[in-house]
Amino acid sequence: MRTLKWIVALVVVLAVGAGLVFYERPLWVADRQLHFKMERGGARSHFVDLPEGRIHFYEQAAKGGGGVPLLLIHGLGGRAEDFAGLMPRFAAEGFHVYAPDLLGYGQSARPASSDFSIATEERVVADFMDAEHLGRADVAGWSMGGWIALKLALDTPERVDRLAVYDSAGIVFQTTVDASLFAPKDEAAVARLIRRMSPTMKVPPPFVARDIIRRTAQREWVMERSMAAMRTGRDVVDSKLPGMQPPLLIVWGAEDVLTPPSIGVTMHQMDPRSVFATVEGCGHFAPVECTATVGKVSVQFFKANPPMPPGELSLQR
Image (cartoon, rainbow, N blue to C red):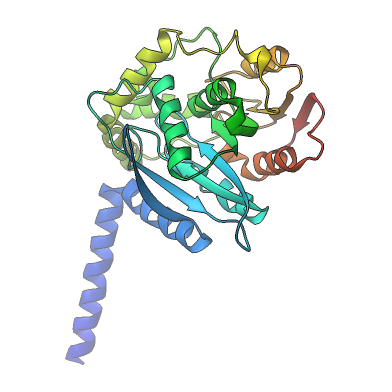
């Protein structure tokens, strides 16, 4: 009987402790669950040393081995795990997927000397491809990652077979967004960030909002430098986009208010050979909110032979 009481007491203590950990660090708990799910699904975590610093990345081989190289590039304030939903879908369709944390983000190095500009991150991606012996690859970029991917394809078209961008930046447009949006200081600011990212996502409860504030504060200086570099305009691709060589897919959440669909329309007009697809009911987080739809149209585009004809698509969530 005494042993049973000790067991019950231990279970209660562990349960209370786990509850406290979840309450104080809900994002840490969520990350542990996500990483476990990714590992079970076949994604593997690695590090590689590049001239710019140590880079963390996830790799997921195609089902059955081999596969067409596919490189996924996350956005401002993001990380490789943002593609956790898309990676297994691509791997199941015959792609060997690579998703690095850009310099300054996720588990990658944050060198104090870096400007974390689009040009710098482009070099990181190119050096990553060299380190992983990826002479050519299909590439997909989300938001700022789309900008980096566009620049990579325009500067070195021989390295990119086909390119997909999701709710991408990269051309000149009017915006009131600054780095403070991505580094909220109170719960109201967290709510503004979520609503700007997607009008369909739920605002998190206060204890989660506090953890978001704590985490974003750690990388605020990186985003400030990155956005300062973006505002110079030196890396915009407006003048080069009409000369895009690789086939281009432009995917946009129809409810995106951070980078409105009009930006995607302009990109499509600049490259009339491109395919422009809007996803109804999704915001800037389309690859997360509408993973199945975004994954399906991306696979169709990457595997189409001959390439998908130019045009516009309206997709349902």
